[in-house]
Image (cartoon, rainbow, N blue to C red):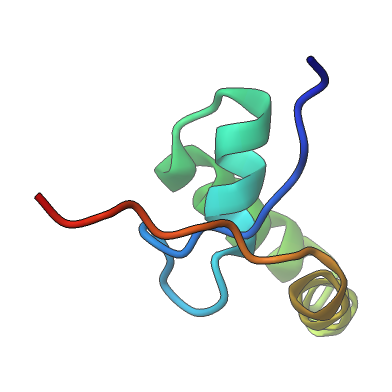
Amino acid sequence: MAKKLFRSEENKMIGGVCAGFGDYFDIDTTLVRLMFVALGLITVMFPMLVFYVVAWIVIPAGEKAAPL
């Protein structure tokens, strides 16, 4: 079964995009967030902000886990 990219509803800070990429690529979410911030600082933040907003709109939200 192929993996699908979803925004995380459980491990999100703003929109869950970085957490979704972390889950998809099996990378620690904190590392994905740090790479996003570093790349944003290198590119003067505007392109990364546009990418994040577009990804937030395009990537569907995942389902929340049922509370125990």
